[in-house]
Length: 75
Image 1: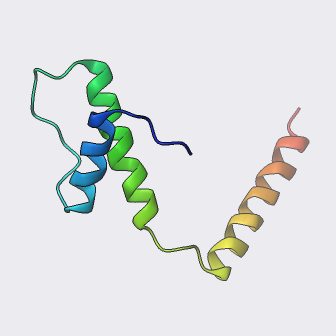
Image 2: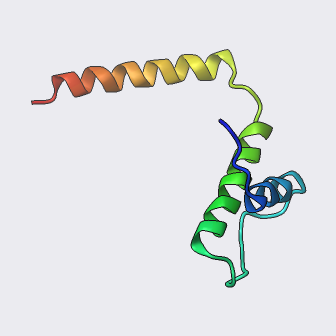
């Protein structure tokens, strides 16, 4: 994912890296600025998560294959 050139996005990333909560109480921010801030926070949060284990990947594959089969059976 290409990171937007928005200081709100990068401020959100920095807030997540600093361990700050994902909450903005500044009512002066526009909807777009707030959305960019949250996108930056979420981007950094995803980057900080550990890679999935082999067991988690196996469980996901099983879940999605069962879901796919059940959708094909649906009338």
